[in-house]
Each structure stands twice: as structure tokens, then as C-alpha cells.
Image (tube, rainbow, N blue to C red; front, side):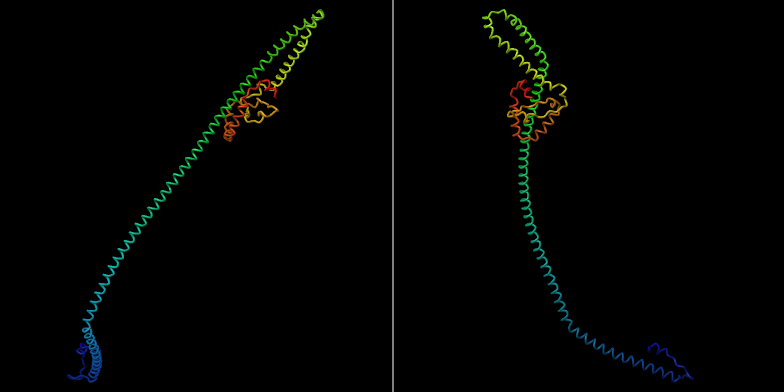
Length: 326
């Protein structure tokens, strides 16, 4: 496409003096013509477009005021909407804050009521538990006191019974030790009586009949007296035979003895008597552990019955009848 610079710079070859070739001029003109024609068409189109744009501009100029007014109205409406929205938001926030404050105060009141109620219930439960604990402790303390008193009573009774048993055993040993001397005394008395009776028997043939009649009542006395002495000797032999079962070798410090205060063998209703095995006696401190175990298993009612049995066992018993029951 031609432009002004190309047109200015275009040169033609000369054929002679100051002449141009016709072909070059024609081709250049044809090219200029075509370019100009194209430019003319484009210029017409541009003019049309410009006219259209001008018309549009005029129309826009006419609508400019209305557009400005519309923009102003839209701006005012937008500002109003924003202001209303802000006011509504503020009121909603205030209402929400009021509701939140009311809910918080209500929740705090309910929480305080629940806490107070729970505290009252807890205090009541604690007081009741303390009361029950005090009652249980009182019952336990009373029971412990009763058991302690019962244990002390049984321990005292056991100590008294053991002392009594030891005293009886010592008396029994003393009796055993005194038996030979008693036997010798009895034999000496018997010999004296026999020696005193022997001269009377020798003098009987020389006595007159009347004197014999007077002395006849004395003869049964002579016959009965040896029998009485013989019976006493037999009883002593029985006692000796019964006492031979007991010896010092049968008793050891580590031997155990049963708690005979509650044994049925020593009841007053038993007619078969009872046997006392001294070898079962124990004079060690193991008695206390055995008695402690028996006391923990017995009730106070059993203690009362044991006291009654002990009172019955405290009745005096002679050594002869005591050992003859065996």
C-alpha cells in the first residue's frame, strides 16, 4: 500500500533528455489509484462509524443527566440500605446481647440453685453418714468393751481356777507325802490296841462268871474296832491306789490342759463322776492364747452360763470323795 513517503521517493527511468518511460508511470499511477480507492472506501466507512459514534455521543449526552440522577438515586438508596443494615445490625446485636445477658443470669441463678441444693444434699448425706458411723462406732465400742470385760472375767476365772487347781494339786501332793506317816500312826494305834487287848484275853479264863457277863458287852467293841480300823485302812489303800495314778513326772511345764469350766464331765447332773487328768494341765503362758481364742467365739450369754458352772464348781469337795470318783 502506498504512503506519502513512497510517493515522494518514487523515481522513473528516463529514456532521453528529461523524459520518463510510460510503463513505469502507468504502473505507478495504477498502484496509486488502487491505493487511493482503498483509502477512500476505508475513509467512507470511518466516516459512517464516526457519525454513528457522534449520534451515540449525542444520545449519551442527552441521557447524562438522567444517568447522573439515577446514579445519585442509586447512591442514596445504597447509603440508606447500608445505614438501615447498620441500624438493624446494631439493634440485633443489642437484642442478642440482652438475650445473652438474660440467659447468663438465668443460668447463673439455676447453677447457684443446683449447687446449693447439691451442697445441702451432700451436707445431709455427710451428717447421716457421720451419724451412722458414730452409731456403728458406738456399737463396736460397746461390743469391744463387753468382749473385753468378758475376756477379763474369763481370764480371772481361768487364773482363779488354775490357782485353785494348783493349790489342790499341792494339797494332794502333801497328802501323798503325809500318807506314810498317817499309815504308820494308824498301824501304831492298831498295834497299841492289839497289845492292850491281848492281856485281857489271857485273863478271861480266870475271871468269874459274873464278871464275864459284865465284860460281854465289851467284846463286840473289841470285834468292831479292828473292823473300823480295817475299813479305814482299806479306804486309805483305795486312796493310795487312786493317787498312784498321779505323779510329778506326769506334769510338765509345756503340757496343755483343757478348759474344764465348760466341760460336760463336771456337770452336777452327771452321775458317772468325772476324771481329772493332771497330766493335761499346763502352767505355761499358752493358756492365755487358748483362752483368748475361746473368748472371741463365745457370746455374753455363754459367759453367764460359764459363770454359773464356775459357781457350781466352786462348791467344796473333799479330797477323798474327789479322788474316789475316779
